[in-house]
Amino acid sequence: MSQTPLPKNQLAQRTRIKICGLTREQDVDAAVAAGADAVGFVLYAQSPRCVSPVRAAELARRLPPFVTPVLLFVNESATKIAAAYASIAGATAQFHGDETPEQCWLASQSGARPYLRAARIPLGDAAGSFDLVKFALDYSQAQAILLDAHVEGYGGGGQTFNWSLLPPNVNAHLVLSGGLNAANVIEGILQVRPRCRSLAVDVSSGVEVSGPGNKGIKDPEKINQFVAAVRAADQQLAEMSKHV
Image: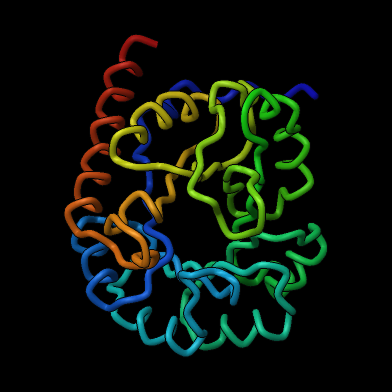
């Protein structure tokens, strides 16, 4: 499927950052202080990072202007999604299950509310078999397509996929997710940014306190290191754009 070439000046765009899987007030505050553009709340009961809609609303009320709350759903009913939207002002939905384009559209109140659609990219060499161009076209009403590794279960598995096997030209805004941390996010941005209209990154386990039982417990220093790495990648791309 052919597409219009992407503008070269995209390399100089700032990479936006989402910190996901927040469960505590201090972690919301740390994400905001570090400069996150969005924070994510998991409303999926089977996730260890799950919070209730009431709890998500409590945490979201701590956000200052222009920091977006994102609500992660997996095969949730339109009624419950609408209730969550109503309780959290300015929220964006993230659909991470088997939702069809029509279901996403209806759940977003016929496009009145923005949403992201997760694409589950196979691990290993199979990543090249995923037709991301068609997926982005099918979900063209989404604000962005979020790229995550296809692992057992839903909601993100903290694993990376082979970024180099993504299509070279995807006419969509993308959000890179799946196993990101301060050590690998620069390479991920350098690999994926030239392939799309704009790029954001989404991190959860990569900024959590180490050790068992700490899912949903964020480490402020890791958040700061992650944000610094993203900004370093942006600087590299800004320099590259001068020579394009």
